[in-house]
Amino acid sequence: MAKKKVWIDPDLCVGDAICVEIAPDVFYMGDDGLAHVKEGMEFTGDREDVQQAAEECPGGAIIIEEAE
Image (cartoon, rainbow, N blue to C red):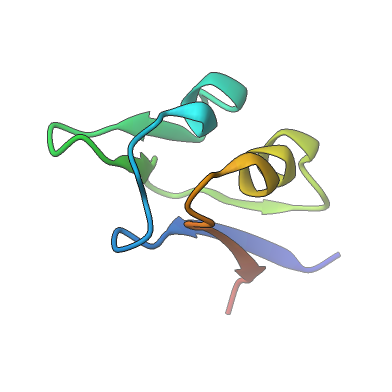
């Protein structure tokens, strides 16, 4: 199973923190008012919570892709 990584495009993040509510072990709110991904968040398989956060992100800022 391929490893995946998740990241947030800061130019698209609107800072509403829905991702933090859905997956607090993956996302956090920074002092800049934007959501960030906790360091080292690579995973295998599908994480439904991360996928849900990406789908519900109002700015479309959450990107899930194959890790290199």
